[in-house]
Image (cartoon, rainbow, N blue to C red; front, side, top):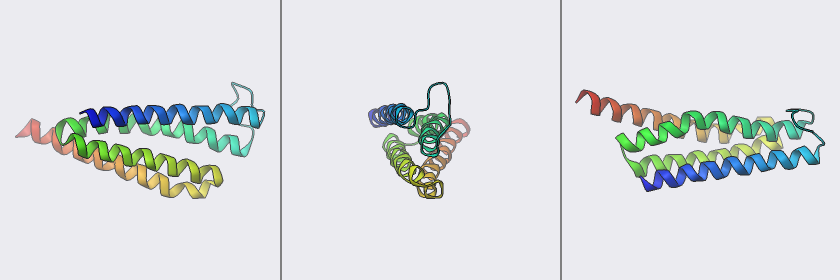
Length: 128
């Protein structure tokens, strides 16, 4: 369980990091709050942050459920893969929108495996 807790904290740190990048981009590209667009690079940096928050709403519970009902280390490993995928996504997307695919796929697959693992574990515990 400690591994999953650690990866959860890494995800939080990553969100803070992406948030700080948005704040810095606001200054660099002169985008005052509460505006959420105004310069192409700012828009991409902001979307990285927003999309990561959206993905975490699915990934975090999937990781904890997968860990609890299947295996803590397996879930933590997949959660770490998700974090790496978000970094790859960020680096690609800020360069050009079409370069975000690799990171998207890495994070998506990790999340899907956690959902499947969690479902398997829950159903096994429930039905057997």
